[in-house]
Image 1 (cartoon, rainbow, N blue to C red):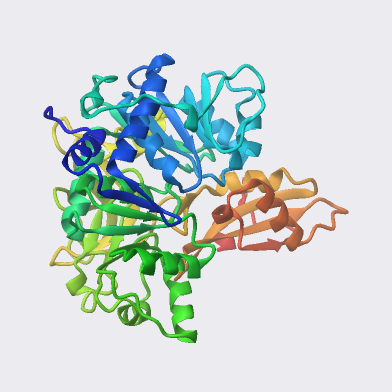
Image 2 (image 1 turned 30 degrees about the vertical axis):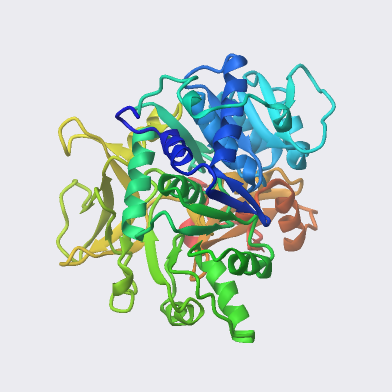
Amino acid sequence: MKSGRLLQDDLTLAYRAHPEKIVAIVEGKEFSYADLFKESQNIAKHLFDRGFQRGDRGAIFIENSWNVLTSIYGVLYAGGVFLIINHLTKQDKLAYILQDSEASFLLSDTMVSRHFIPAVEQNSCLREIIYAGDLIEPFGSIPLTRFDDLHFGASSEDASLFSDSINLDLAALIYTSGSTGDPKGVMMTHQSMVFTSDSLVEYLRLDAESRIMCFLPFAFDYSLYQILMTVRLGASIVIGKSFAFPSQIFEQLRKSGATVFPGVPTVYSTLINMYEKTPFTLPTVTRLSNTAAALPAKYIAMLKKIFPNALIFTMYGLTECKRVCYLEPELIDTHATSVGKAIPGTEVMVLDQDMNPVAANQEGTLYVRGAHVMRGYWKKPEQTKQMLVANIFPGEFILCAQDRFVMDGDGFLYFKGRSDDIIKARGEKVSPVEVENALYSISGVREAAVIGVPDPFEGEYVKAFVSLEPGSDLSSRQLRQRCIAVLENFMVPKEVVIMDELPKTDSNKVTKRDLS
């Protein structure tokens, strides 16, 4: 194995060490490391034969499934950069991401073809679509190939057949909403993602016997790293499609004997409500993690009853570096409102507006230093400059988290609020501009403004304020229904308030401060 580990090297090593070990359980079906290695090699060989070059992008638009895993490693083995798009993404946003990333291949499923077919018809970059499911009739000039038709017969000697990548090359683009309304591609190298996986494994105290339950969308970096940690360790992952039917997830957990349960506050709220109606325990779980928003203190006592054998980890992070800090589970009772200290191998600073450290217990902006910091935003140099700051450490960029924090005298961090306009709902970043644009597209809407409202379960929820054109009789319910048709679920306003006129400044700009 060459020095400078690549993400796909973890799969090669796991395959060579224990090819028959189970890597994934999907809807009760088990897949081995040999299955993952060979099927991803099939994809890599096909991409290579179709002219896929080192650094090309492969877009993955599939709901949580086995094919997400094979697609990730197939693109990586081919020397490419993968990006996972939430399968609930509507066609306009999908078209934007595909064009912005200049993805040359799309790996998808006929279950979402109603979105990807119109999204790719005008695309100037895509060379082929690889898909699972029923046969698709040809459309346009883009070739179509089914996953089932890829057969190469790979061996362990083929792992580096297609690529000369090094660990400074990009491994992934992780798209996140931006204040301009357009999603931004966070550029992550092999080096940064390998470092992050190692750090997560270390502080979560995971090992090769870990069995990770994952049901949150793999487009969410929290979920993506569950895959990377699994393969890094030679462990196993139990894949659920969503949390829409919680009882099914818990049944999967029980049957699989999952030991690691990554969740967000909305998941834990649902779980606690179920427990209060009919008490139950999930004793196989030994690691429970939370992100997206702080766990209310009252939840912790309940979760200890449901997961009697679990260490509970609370954490804070952002897509631009994945994870910033975590709280040791032994301290969750004494430091319940803290998000802990920096993850292994990294450094955090709370600075004032002049980039000087603030005193203990004084509020400032959080800055993050480490190998896990992004390379920048794909094709967005100006927005990159706002996040990556020079002149603190010679020749080095550090990340401005754009969030307000306090650090106490012992180094524990306490989140105080967001410096930018982005809404963090259910662990996803929501651009108010994107939601406002959706509202403005509705005939009869005159003005629209969107804000985030603090919520103990979701972190924040989306609230919209709208004024209507004269004669319009649109209701709040109708406006929400129109939003549901064009936005992902987490972006749809929970409340829509109709006003005669939105508050404005002297220069006629809407003042969101007055709305909140």
